[in-house]
Image (cartoon, rainbow, N blue to C red; front, side, top):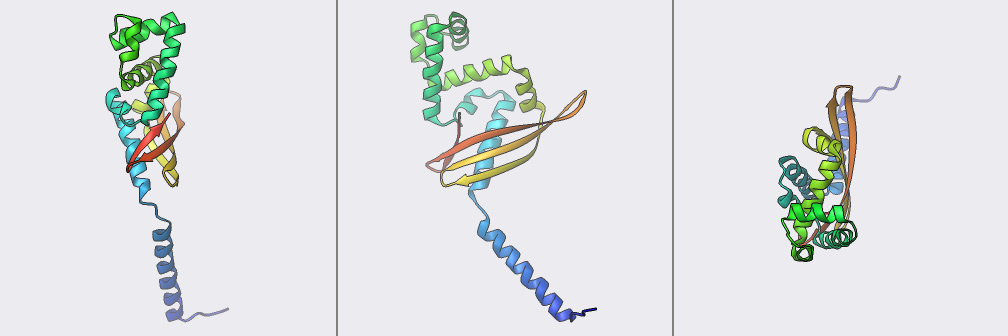
Length: 174
């Protein structure tokens, strides 16, 4: 049997600890916490029903594209147009084009939650049990795991989001 002197063993453990600390410091990404904070802020807004605040966390160019698509759909689908006009408190369909893009996001978010109550349940009652972040420059992908207790037992859901940093602010992409 090979015997290693106690001093050598302690020195080896100390070297491994220092190398481990240096490696964890070298691969640490300080932006990860900012990305997680943007995600938790968004989910917090959704949980509290703060749609206006949630809309401010979405990339502005994506909001413009979403608004354009919603206006196109309102032009071709009477039921959608009626729902949009009611939510946005617009009396004439022509006035829809003057509605701020953030309000269209609020409308579509409310509509999605009404049409898919299971999404609302996961966001409002689910516990976030883990997040993972992969960042490349000013782009990041975040994966969040939710656990929701239902009568049949615990169910797990995964949410994947893409984020973009502009002027040191992380925005969610649609």
